[in-house]
Amino acid sequence: MFVHLAPESGLARIRRSGIARSRWAKPGLPRGVYAVPVTRNFYISHQWLRELKRQHNGSIIAVYFRVPDDEIVWVGHYSQTHRPMTASEAVAEFMTADNREGWEVLISRCIDTKEIHRTRILPQVLGWRYSPSAKGKPPFCACTYCTRGEYGGRKLRLRYGVTD
Image (cartoon, rainbow, N blue to C red):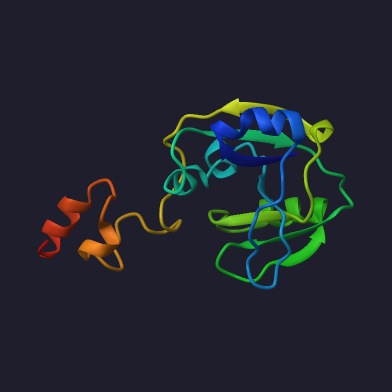
């Protein structure tokens, strides 16, 4: 079982047509559907929510789906190279990783409506922003350009002495 996070505005389309592949691809990877294996730890399974919320207006929903165990998927940390393996091997790799924050699975095809198990509206405060280990670290850049429109951007600029 995997979970894909999507904007709530696309819920009717997902229920009608399934989950479409992303419009863009990372270098060296095919286009596909990004997901995370469902674990007993709710936070780890839904860790990408706050990072995705930075890019989308509105609420984020969870779409739970199943793929065959022998299907080839790509797995890895978002900032490192991904490796192809079967879906069952990807789940095992994810479960045995020391730090599972930032990991993702890429399924290189669309997800059909028959494979979708359920959809769910999530609490909108789960996960990390910027990077999994960003909490408590100073920002890379606190200039007016980089922090404009960000929540708390003005206070951040004042704290680091950046003038508007």
